[in-house]
Amino acid sequence: MILHKGETLFRQGEYGPLFHLKSGMLKIVRVHEDGSQFIVNIIVPGETIPHHSLISQSPYNGSAVALVTCEVDVLPEAAWYEALEQDAERCREVALQLQNKLRMMQQRIDQLTEVTPAKKLQKLESWFQHYIAPDTLTEVLTQDEIGQLIGLRRETINRLLRAQSKP
Image (cartoon, rainbow, N blue to C red; front, side, top):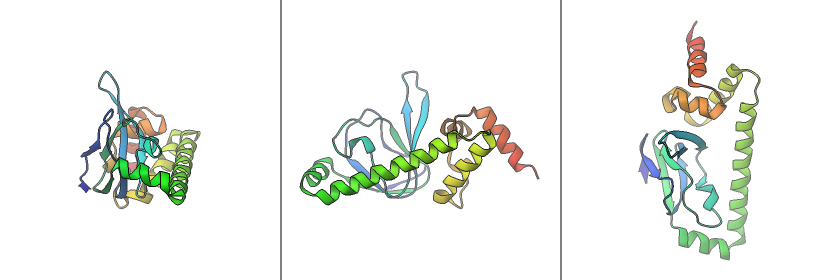
């Protein structure tokens, strides 16, 4: 299946299949009771989501939205869980995927612990370029979303981006 930028793959609170992202990039957003949204995760090619349902089914914890054009495979949940029960190698693959996601989250934590806001933004931009080049970070995320990912206010992100664009 092909998703275009801004299209939703699944919505928070729904139940459904798992998905394997073949290409592109997704954001996972949580919608709060007041309607506000907060970006909580970035999904990159090779990941099967939702992570919290890789071993047992539960409702989607957030909504998955395409940041760029994505190619996604649908993995029906009954077949997925049956295969896990019968194939130890499949379980190992799931464990390795979760390990890789933990490492990615550690990188995000490292970005958050940078001393200066400019360094935080620089690290995030560098990480994103690995997946979205030739697009730029600001072409796929809003300033508010960038701030959510690195723990800064939108106004700070705006100031940093303006400073970067000055010769």
